[in-house]
Image (cartoon, rainbow, N blue to C red; front, side, top):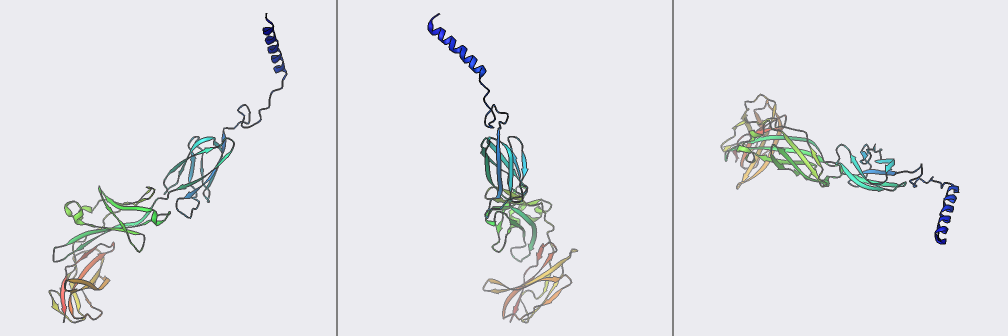
Length: 327
């Protein structure tokens, strides 16, 4: 045997002996895979907040770690905490009624902590969605039928977060526009926009208002329906057909043949070179009325007046124009 091989064998033998005599190295570090204290987790904390400013915490939002199914509801300030979240890249799902679900991915450090700030989108809220119908009789070109759809639309993230509002009936949709004075959205649907150009097509059909915000969250109203289309209207009997009257005329009419409760609305319109200007309107007259005295003094000129009935739901039917002259 060569000297070199003998030296290697001796050194190897000594290494084995020394290894057997050496004490075991400690494994108490939680980051040491050999340690009984070894952890594969970290801490995850955070808050669920509104999308719109000023940011505020959202209570009772459900926060779920998808990797292990751990779940927790947020506190009153929107905070949540997981002491043993899986370390590494994880996916967090946040859900709450009336909010758009959201998912984010974060990296939790092994044995460390991560603090998350999650903003979720509040869905638009729709209330008081309704439809009322109107028949306006006229000498030319004939009766005009329409339906007015209105709804109150709000958004916890701010009114400007609302992007689109529309009403849907069957496969038809009609865009709704906001009122300048409040958060009310509305659209007038003419009978000519409906199948067969007939407002009766709406009867019995379900209507819904939808609101979409800038994050594409969608709010939907409960179902609502047309309550009534009034075909009958009052019939003016005096003055009519350019009758000459006093400056404070008395208006007479025949009531409509209907059995439901209603009130009257009278209106006087002045005609100047083809221009029509409403000079007086009196709503809310009891259905027992069949005449009414104009409460003021009309200047000399040509006028017409109309009488309409309005039921408890707001549906209306108006008479033809009855003209008169104040000399």
